[in-house]
Amino acid sequence: MASRRLTVALACMAWLAGAGTTVRAQSAAASMQVSADVSDIQISIASVGQLRFGDVIPGTPHTIDPTVSPDAGKFEILGARRAEFTLSLTLPTLLRAGAGPFSIPIGFGATAGCYYARDRQNQCNTWDPGTVLTGRIRPTPPPNNTFYVWLGGTVAPSPTQVPGVYSAVVTASVAYTGN
Image: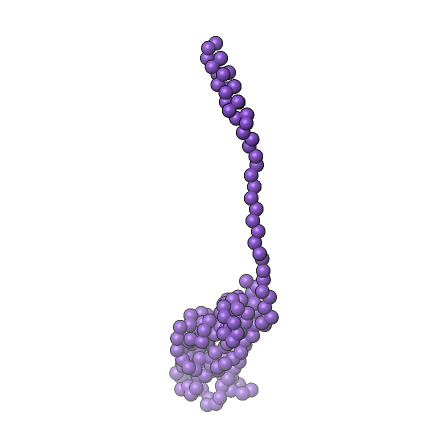
């Protein structure tokens, strides 16, 4: 019984100790400004250098290295600062001599493409130009909102290749990704 009285006494004391304390719910709030700068800069691409194999010898393949050769083709992409884009190239498989039947095979290997955000070919990163490239425009205002792509490749004239000027077209397409 003494233990029951002690328990009741302790319970009463605990109740009295907390009787003057009011517990209230707490809350906090914060806000932030949200903004977006809408750019009116359309993405564009221009060929600023042709892929030139020059004189080739029948029966001897000739390769242009996109990382160092001044004969590599070159595209310049302009767009909104920091905008992500994709680049797709339509690559030929043959160079043709006019409308005639004569042709030279042309190939673009896994390192025939090269890209960099600045016009620094010797620092570019290689990629397979047969695949889609995803890049990002530099975070600088015009005219430095750029991205550069170089293109090399290999032609393989046959030992009996007919002399002449052979050519083809590479088509480049760019589009913003929205990222």
